[in-house]
Length: 457
Image 1 (tube, one colour):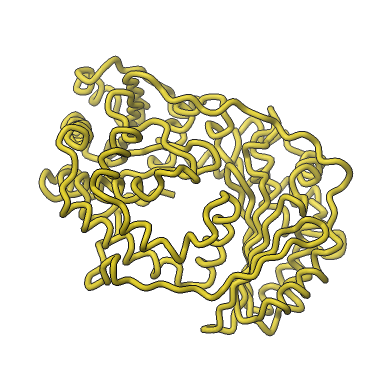
Image 2 (cartoon, rainbow, N blue to C red; image 1 turned 90 degrees about the vertical axis):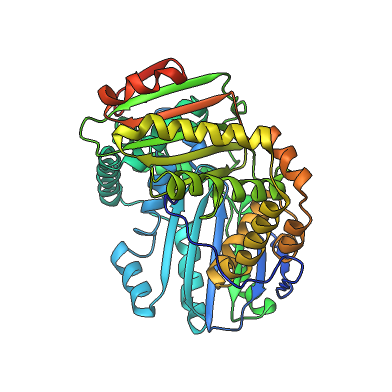
C-alpha cells in the first residue's frame, strides 16, 4: 500500500558515515525435506516472531480461477484435519498471540507472534495449519462472499480503484495485471477442490523459507522446527507452474480517464515499468526516488503541496517484485486543478532529467534513508519480514548490516545515471479518476484521452 501522506523527516539522525548498525549473527540450515530455516536472536523482548514465505502468490492463479491464492490464504487458518476454526482461534486468543496469512503477487506469507514460553504450543499449531489445512466448504463459501464484498467495495475507494486500473493497463495479461483478490466473476467459482489443488502445487517445503527471530537460541529453533516441520512433504510430484513472458514497458504517452461522477477530487497516477527487486541499481534508485518523491521534503511534495497548494501530498515509488514492478507517481487534487497538477508533475519529471540533482539533495536523501533504516527494522517482526524478503529475492545476506554504507556509497553521478535509465519521461501511462466531463477538455493538451468504465478490466 502506497501512503498518500508521507511521514515528516526525522530530526537529529546520524549521517550515513557515522551511523553504526549491527545485527546478531544469523544461523541458517536446510532441513532434510528442503525447508530453508533462518534464525536471528532478539533478546530485548520475550517474544518469538515467525515468518514463513511460500513462493506461490496470485501469479499462479489458474485461468478462470483468479483469486485462488488469496482465498487459500484466507481459509488456511479456518480449520485443519484435527481442529476447527473455533479451536484454532481460541488457542491463539488464549495465548495472546497473533497469526496472519496474506497473499501477494509473488508469495504467500504466514506470520506469527507469540511469547517465547508458548513456543511448544504455537509452532506445532503453525505447522498443522500450513501442512494439514482442511479448507472446510462452509468456510470457503463464507470467504468467497467476503472477498466479493471487498471487490465491490473498491468502487468506493478511489485510491484502490485507480491502482486497479493503472495496474491492469500497465501489465495487461501478465499476472501482475490481475488483482490479488481476483475478479468478482472468478471468485464465485472457486471451490474447496481448487484450494486443495493450489495448496498441493505451491505449499512445498523445498521451496519455502522459514524465519524465526526472537528470544531463543539457534539450537532450540532448529530442533523445534525440525520436530514440527520435519515431516512436511509435498504431495506427489510438483505440477509445473505456469510460465509467463516478462511484462513489457509501454511506449509513448497514454492517457486514460475513469469517470466517477460523484468524485470530490481527481486521483492521478503516472508511470511505467520499473525494476525487479534484485536490480543492481537498487541503492541509487532508493536515493533518487527519495529526493524526487519518496519523502516529505521531496521535490514533488514540496512543489505540489508546499509551493502550489494543489494537494495534501504527492509521492513517487518503485514496486519491487520478483519481476519488474511499476514505477509510480501519484497525487490527488480538486477537480478544477486537475490540469494544473498534471502539468506540474510532468514538469518535475522533465526538470529531473534536464537539470539533474544537486550534491546537497543527494546528501539529504542519503542521510534520511540511512537514518531511518535501523529504526524501521528495530521491531523483531520487521527484522523477521526483512530477513525473509532478503532470502526470497536472493539479496546479499549482509543487506541489513551494510544498508547504511551502501546508501553512503551512492554518488550524484549514480543518481543521475539511474534517473535517465529508470525514470520515464516520454513513455508514460497517465491514469486519471474523477469527474470525466469536467476533466477531459483540460487534459487533452497532454495527449489523446481514452475513457474507461469504472470497473473495466
